[in-house]
Image (tube, rainbow, N blue to C red; front, side, top):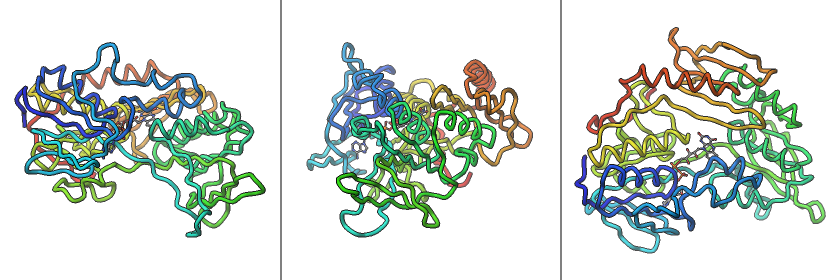
Length: 416
Ligand SMILES: Cc1cc2nc3c(=O)[nH]c(=O)nc-3n(C[C@H](O)[C@H](O)[C@H](O)COP(=O)(O)OP(=O)(O)OC[C@H]3O[C@@H](n4cnc5c(N)ncnc54)[C@H](O)[C@@H]3O)c2cc1C
């Protein structure tokens, strides 16, 4: 669907993908009204620094702002309003103040919310929600927490958990323990050499790793005036802490679409989209962490990384305005932990064969490639910026087939 340049476009969610969709639409010459509705009461901002430089105080809120206050986008921002429902006819959305916002096209970019641990018992008062990291509000709460001298447990074994553990060490925590549910966090997804390099770097700075049991629940008790938490592991063992931070994944923010005709994935409830971001209801598109796109090369596009959100926004804005199709890059992510810059590009799956090309885990310098059926699918570098850059450049040039077309109409299937 291409809309005329004067059509009304509504973007739900004022985050990374929402901002870039609006920016792309204007860049492609859309002259009609663009409204961006966001539930947060602050200008759109970038999230990666929330677990890193923002938590240490090295950057402030203003540094993370996406829109340039000197040269703002020509869009109507509706802040502090949650969208609660979608209507197909007339096309539009309802906000939590009861207002209806009609549009010719709707782009959903509502991101995801942080998952958390349940209480260990149903008893009132025995559970205090752990810290999570998804929004600026979450990061502010953790930034204000007194970590100095505290015992911190970080639950989760993904990049967000490990970045946060590294940041807590820098904030003067007495002890930082990661409860990852595997002895070598990341091993299942990235393979042993990478997971080993990460573990070695963390242990060298004092981070401890709880034995492989999964964290299942949380309970809170007072010892005198001091609040202590207990993370309950599978099998019943517990880890005590003053501060618990939960980084165990995120859930697409699509609850408000349950009554609509929008098709969601069975497992994660992400919005099913074709490879130009079109959802199952005509005129509705989705991009970023709330969406599961089809992919030409692998069946499904990865979800949850910065680059995917920005690229999908670019594809949707091109599709809506009829601009030339955007050429997608190979999937890409990065993570900063202590002095490690970890970068992954292409398809990296635990089931794939992997081999170390250069470096060793002990050096904190590693280049690993991933292969499926003998064909190279992805690369991961630890402090190998140049190699990863060259690999991405090479793949970009040799993969024109990954071009996406506005009219492809292939909704993502659930099977890989
Ligand atoms: C702490 C943190 C660190 C990260 N670090 C990295 C990194 O190092 N590398 C990397 O590749 N990626 C990283 N990411 C991932 C990356 O930031 C996300 O993939 C990206 O922000 C997704 O963009 P989005 O627009 O889909 O969602 P978001 O940026 O989350 O924006 C969604 C917006 O929609 C709003 N919203 C939700 N529901 C509604 C509703 N019903 N009505 C109105 N508004 C609504 C939300 O409040 C939010 O403002 C990190 C993410 C986090 C949280």
